[in-house]
Length: 525
Image (cartoon, rainbow, N blue to C red; front, side, top):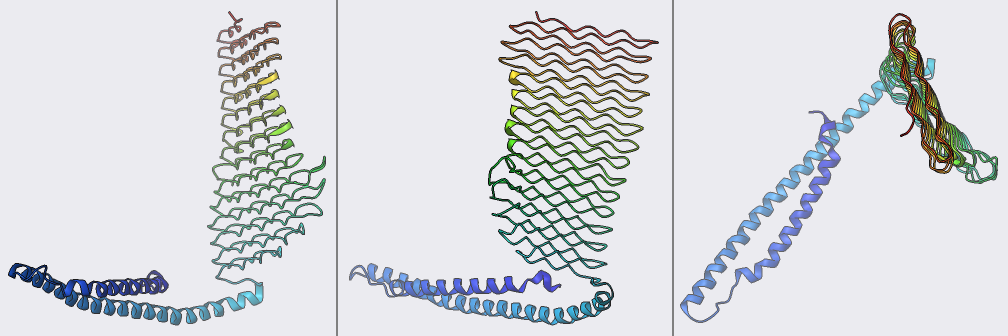
């Protein structure tokens, strides 16, 4: 049996618990002895005397049994304690020669390369910003980077790289600062070349100094052969105030290994201007896809969302990060990542941030060259002035375009719907246009136009106009045209408003060889 399974410290703790239980039971038995062994008769009659004698005999029998149980319990505790000691002794005896053997093996590699063959890298000490040590060349995880010295704005240490097998070390957190910018987070270490997870980037440090910026998040480490890229660190907050107080940008996600996915980008930090979200890491050559972009930071002006990572050769593009919330202006959503170079769908765009002037949605990513659907555009943020929806991505040679994002709702005006993406050259339908955003006191947003079809395929429908109460209703978007064969997209419907009704969208043209024109949109009844 392996000594690791035995866990001597657990056996010792169990023996101590059992000994404590035995002492408690012995004390209880002793306390019960007097009132149960010598029982006085209730009266001078024969029946009372016989009953008292019977109960007394039971008490004496219980005490005799308690003595035997106590002896057995003591023997069991002694055996358990001896077993724990034996296991601990065997473990100590085994560890020393094994460690000596490992040291002998590692010595020439440390001397020649400054790195062991087997073993984990050392962690950087907190408050020093030291880099984590590299893991063993054959096996071992990288050490974590040390955090920066508090109050100094020092950068966090980078995580150590793994060997062939092992995980990359996490980057250290950047230090806070009361007299300048926050420290940047350390970068994550690379994952094992054959197997292992990449390290995450360290978070940026915050600052309390006027007009200073939070530290940027560290980048995620690169994945190994089968490993995913590490996530980027979160940007530090700018708490000192002032027009120049910007949150730190989120760290970029790490690149995926040959068969790994890209890492997610880190979120931007809080500030008068929110930090930009980190970009998602690109997917590996044969990996499943790119990483998603980080969310923009909160602030008076919200930060822009990070763009999604591309999808390698055959993967899906990562989604764009959402724009950050803002009290005055919202951040725009990040663009979706492109699909794989050969085939793969594009990533969706991120939504715009909520604010008085809301952010616009990010554009959808384009599909891969041969096959794939374009990513959908992100929705516009809602607020006083609704943000515009993002445009849909373009399809591959065979593939449909992505749908346009809907315009954001606004009390003063609705956002415009995003345009649908065009289909691939050979086959595919155009993406539908996004609907215009609604409004209470202003004009409704116009619907987005539908995307064009490929050689064979249908045009995308136009988006409907946004409704309103006091202003003018939004106009419907025009339908997309077909090319050779296929029906044109229908036009979007017009919306009603007290100040006027929008115009209807015009239907797209049908195919040159076959296909009907799309129908025009409808007026409100």
